[in-house]
Image 1: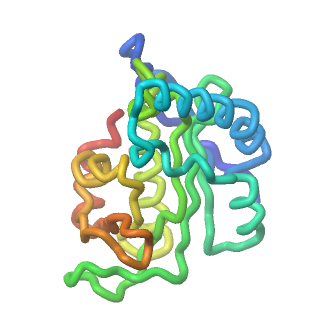
Image 2: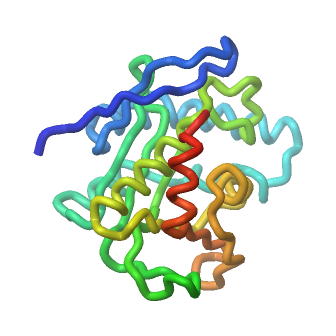
Length: 212
């Protein structure tokens, strides 16, 4: 299967200018190499900043233990686990893995229907304000990946319905920026909040544009 690269735009925060980027419909060796060579050292530096600033451990990045190479190895050849990545200026800015087979909707209006579930999604460390990066390099990565999940949901016949469990640092993004419904803490998933997007919410998100 050939790799699809869709033109998108990110906001260069420092220059306050839109810059061209690409949404890839895969996570390839190039993204994994960036994770090892660029993301991991940047995340280690960020953790040191948080430590020096006496930020409580509970507010440290809860994705810091993720091993993207292991995650991709675990879904090789599985059609129900499509992956996506965002590239800008030669570096990986975000990655996401979906699951399109097992999960069902929980919101009463669409309960039991299929959805595209976001298993893992992560922004590059230099784009994350909660890591005390001032200013972050780019904005818009998360919105691009959410839109990719919506479009995959549509392609699967799920009418834009998506769901996910959010790390605490991302609750506000999914509730306010994405307009998803917060169904509260889920005891089955370490009490992370479960968010779900209806067909109507996905249409609203796309209509306003995945603006950075």
